[in-house]
Amino acid sequence: MMAKARFLSVEGGEGAGKSTQIGALASAIRDAGYEVVVTREPGGTEGAEAIRQLLLDGAATRWGARSEALLFAAARSDHVERLIKPALAEGKWVISDRFLDSSRAYQGDGSGLNDADILKLHEIGSQGLLPDRTLMLELPEDEANRRAARRDGNAADRIGGRDRIFHHRVHAAFHRFAQQEPHRVKIIDASGTFDEVARRMAAAISDYL
Ligand code: Z5A
Image (cartoon, rainbow, N blue to C red; front, side, top):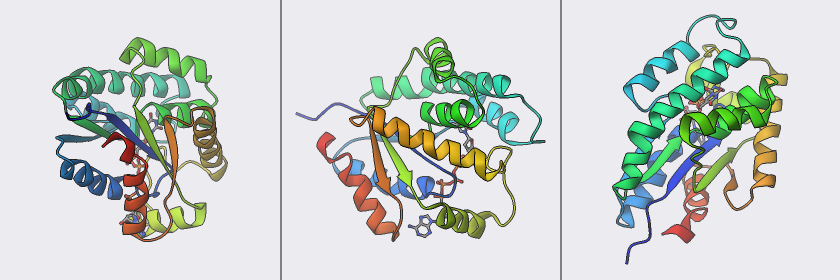
């Protein structure tokens, strides 16, 4: 009998290789005989993609921390209701490039909001849905910056362009989540070649296949 469909999120700082690795992870799961839906946050549905533009484009000061957190929660609510839950109900795996832990790290620790408040918004918007497993890609800051700069040059979105102290707080928060929830959140060493990282990602979910 096939094991049940799972909801996975992939998290980490900018340039860690999340988008690059998700395709390989989805292929490994498809090879095991499952249907897989790959999606991203903010985004994944028409409404949430529209909110993505509001969140990532424009001046750094466009939103305050609270309105930003509400917009992420609203985008997530639509994504969960219209894409993630229906796919899981049809027996498909879902892999989301970022999910709730990004709000906890960026709007919570990064921007000074309470973790409890972010979780409350998630309860209201998405009935508290959590991934079965979260793969947290970790890369030394210099290498992550090199990779992001190779890809983007000097361009950065509203949030990626924040200062080093902000991004340090985000990294520390991701680490804390892995310590607090070791069964759900697995740290993946994102250094090395594409194939090396892909093998670590696949190993971190092998108990589900
Ligand atoms: N955000 C938030 O604040 N709150 C929330 O609740 C949510 C998000 C959901 C979304 O940005 C922003 O929204 C994000 C967090 C915030 N801002 N920041 N920071 P996004 O979706 O546009 O981008 P991102 O999520 O930050 O990811 P990214 O910058 O696209 O990075 P990535 O997906 O981790 O990396 P990548 O594109 O796969 O790889 C980067 C480059 O490295 C690329 O050229 C690759 O070819 C290269 N690469 C990848 N792997 C390797 C290896 N192994 N060796 C060498 N080079 C490699």
